[in-house]
Image 1 (tube, rainbow, N blue to C red):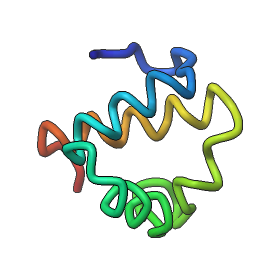
Image 2: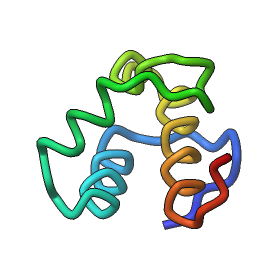
Image 3: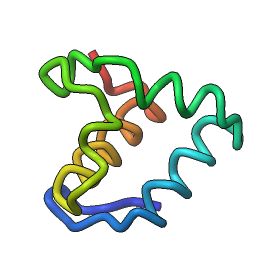
Length: 71
């Protein structure tokens, strides 16, 4: 599932992407959500779940991780 940058992201879309990326492993998902991400300025992904815009940023990071674009 590809999203345009700055496109809104629903909780269901992000959850689907997390499950796909982490093979439905809840422990791995929670570990990622509770780890500060340098690409996000050191923010914890879990703290970014409240708004569509922040979820879209998380979705973009997952896409970058999936395709190896994350530095």
